[in-house]
Length: 232
Image 1 (spheres, rainbow, N blue to C red):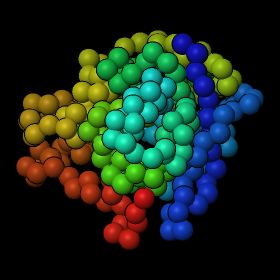
Image 2 (cartoon, one colour):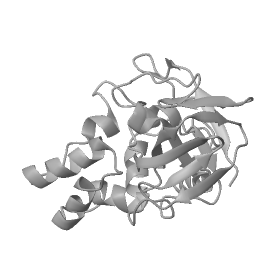
Image 3 (cartoon, one colour):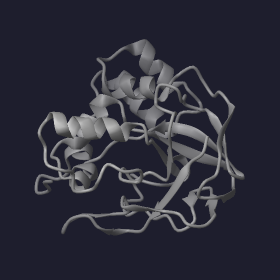
């Protein structure tokens, strides 16, 4: 499966918020290291990037859905057009979605070997990016969030490299994983599945363990809606 490859630099998303979500197409092969693509930046390294979130893959299939969603609600055009790269992804493909990809799946990406580590967790910067308040919440509820990958073997990746499944990592799809944590009531058996899944990122496993121990879900308000004084 052929990819499109994107990287971005930190810039102002609003007067109060910096982000590297504005990705541009790569025009030459890039080195894919343990923390991601050469030249790709993250403004908030606490919540973005690192070895468990080295790469972000977003299905190009979803862009037609978001365009239809916007039209069906009679919304103005988004501040950023519905085109690959708009969601801040590094990788974009057609024909591969959250239902088909599983946590722990191994893919050969050019010379690199990458592994699905977790679903992408939408944040309030998407509201600013597209100009729609609460868009991040809509995205989370839809399950069209994409996924993140860790890099197991470093190597060069061309802008039109092939992405090839090497091994199926688990029976848990990215969509199912996200739904367990975000889009269903507390189900102990499901949360234990996440907490005990070795190929799932430590952060997601901890979220599942915390919900099991506390009996209440985490508070996602700040992640999804941002500070009180930030609005799209």
